[in-house]
Amino acid sequence: MTKARGSKNLPVKSDARILMCSPEHFAVDYAINPWMDPADWAQKSKSLGLRARREWQGLRRRILSLGATVEEVPAVAGLPDLVFTANAAVVMDGIALVARFRHPERQREEQHFERDFRKLWARGLLAGVRTMPDDILLEGAGDCVWDQARQMFWMGYGPRSDRDAAAVVSETFGIETIALELADPRFYHMDTAISALPRGEILYVPSAFTEAGTKEIFDRTTAEQRIALEPADAAVFVANAVHIGDDIIMSHCSDSLRERLEGAGYRVHATPLGAFHKSGGSAFCLTLRLDHKSERGSVAQRAAS
Ligand code: ARG
Image (cartoon, rainbow, N blue to C red; front, side, top):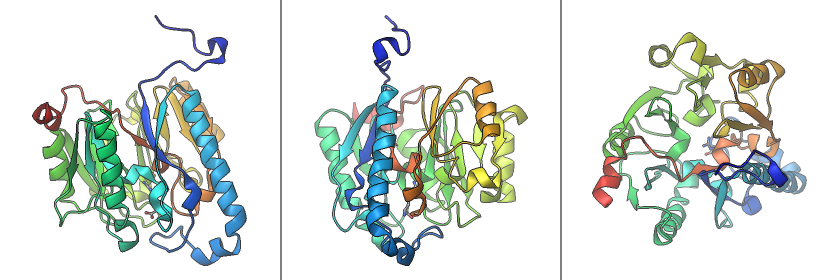
């Protein structure tokens, strides 16, 4: 039985299950992307820390209000970027492929995330946990964006992940994975550069891609499906959006973009995440979908069952 949206103010239950990590230890303590300025953070660390907690709660509440389930992993002192769970793994058809990070500052997160995924597996929320080969880097869903409409992954490589990770992803899940080089240091993770909406539209930051990458995007989309972000929207991480069905959550939305998205049948929810922008992250980075399913069921899942 389907319940009318908003009846008794209760959210309509969604299948979306989203992994988050509370920002109690979030800070900008080092710089591994152009947005991060530890000296600037240090000057206002108290107020920015409070703001981050408030903003993160706002995002969490918004996700819950849309009927999704939130799973939390524990925050760890000394690991300020653990809050960006999108980087923890690529999860598809119940299998988590745990990340391998480029920078030593974030490599320390790998063991925590692996343990967290094994716990989710023990609770029956995952069917299996895989790790990357030692010498191939992949920073999780942050660099491997699922496109439900096309049943493929858009993988980004260069600043963080290795091009060779695409073969690992496609072998693990039996899903087409195309690797595009990321060309603009400000958009160093694929999820800052592209968002694949469920009805087939692609939000993307034109400057983030090489000519070859842009051609790939053009080859796989129609003109109506492509939404090139204006620099002002790109700079507030509009591409880093979370979508739950036709609801899209982002930190900020310009009037023209809102009009375009609402015209295409989406509902847009803006929730401020400025404290996280100072670390180079926004809504999508702070979440990891555990429930994504491919239409055919992945190779890994079939092997696990
Ligand atoms: N400070 C973090 C880093 O540079 C931000 C990560 C944002 N995550 C993302 N999926 N884009 O690694």
